[in-house]
Length: 222
Image (tube, rainbow, N blue to C red):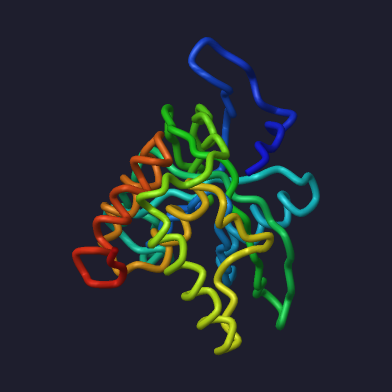
């Protein structure tokens, strides 16, 4: 997978590329690099965020919720919200407005990051200083994982037959990180586990864990 250039506002530091004031979008899901994320936007804080990103081309950060709701449930905004201090950058790839005050958008996962100096604006939007993490190196899956690669290809063909397209093209079945990430997106695994897999820096280790899950559940075999 080709590594994209960092946003122009990125500051290069001793511990990685820093994105100051990155807007965050806490969700009850995990976005993986190269992943597809459809969103329905109707809250003012996120409508403003998406409008800004459409205008500037800048990404925002998706972080997995640990506690609280995606939508503000208290007018005072004082509900408790906790989320992971790491996530994945998202870029907007298309946007539609089916009715006034609602945006239907699709996002692509870019690069992983960790955050610090988290703060919340009066409008409820979270921001943080983010440090980008190294992207996966594009390396072929090891021979012992070829059964998992073949199973993913069959899963893609089955989903396409049902007019379901959960992955962005081009497909990267020759890329260990891509295969691991796509399995992580569709397997029924707990959200905290999914997050840990996303942040695992070694794509082969990630694929090994996925392969073990598939074998334990009889999805693949030698």
